[in-house]
Length: 477
Image (tube, rainbow, N blue to C red):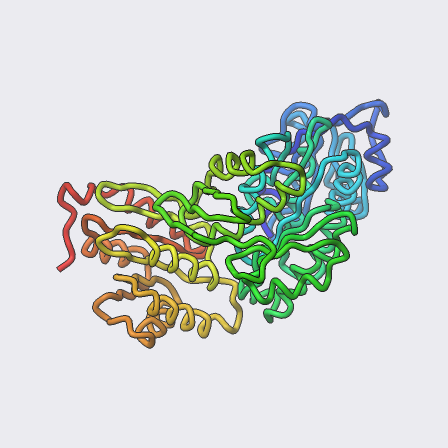
């Protein structure tokens, strides 16, 4: 991972005495003229160091924080946390530990237990950030709390989420992700969640996990970690997710549209910028585009109820929800409706995108622009073909596929009856924009999606930069 330097993370904490830090991370102080100093902020990127911050030298695949200790000192770092084996690179006051990442997690473990805040942990193959932001919006109607910044959800990012906590915070909503078995268990041990939510278990990150069963096992580690006094919320419409209930020592709530769920969404109404539904006789509306937001909304209702919020407060929180950049953001570009869903992609999330377009109330044409879904391992070709079949069955008016697996997507779509006249295959973004220039016409709804490293946001920027359709953009024949 490149994150130790490129993350650019910093955290402002409550003041921590040097002796507390040393005890928490089993560290040795070297070069301090004053043992009574305190820290209230740490950083992992020397370029962002501010005066009297503590610099934490982390090691990643491509960068070693120890190479930047001197730079951090020049910029005003009060001290550095370094690995004893690399202390030769470090000058100035420093705290030596065996492993700096382990020490950061140990410090976070200690720091978390200094506060009584309710911690809500969220994991899942898709939908973590949406659920996190929605629950934070709901709880914030009455309580003061924090949430993971951006997607700080792995062993490097979770500490900087937790270290935002202060004495006035009553809750924290944190994402927990994993690239290997055991990682969520380790993170849960650090953050001690009392509430655990699993949004889905699906074929994402198969390159790392290998099988869907291993993906489920990884997500289930969060549920196993919950205390008897806590509770779990599971996507009850996801069969793989439901199976995780057997791992819980605490009460479990199933949510979804199916009648077998503890909290069921009925009478669902889809608008261009909202999803309305009934749950337990109450009408709710979430300010979001797409039916797939129901799981997050229902999970938020359960959490809100369990901490004492009434229906009006929960409804207010759902109305306040704002999507994160690149996650089903609706934009109007001239006479075109553009849906930016470029943050990431997986088979399950592409299916949700298809459902969104299929449910769209008014459109001249519904067009999906799709880049590769990555990290799928040896199943990548088959999963792209299967996803293409789902696209073909959705009755969309157009599919533009770009990337290494474009032929697999298109093959699946044609296999399900989508005609070749409604499909374009592109090898790169340059060809894709030429195709779009020919295709787009007034009234189209265009959804752009792809895995993070496919840079499909550049396609969004291209569309946003075009002359509005009504002012002369060429029409498709």
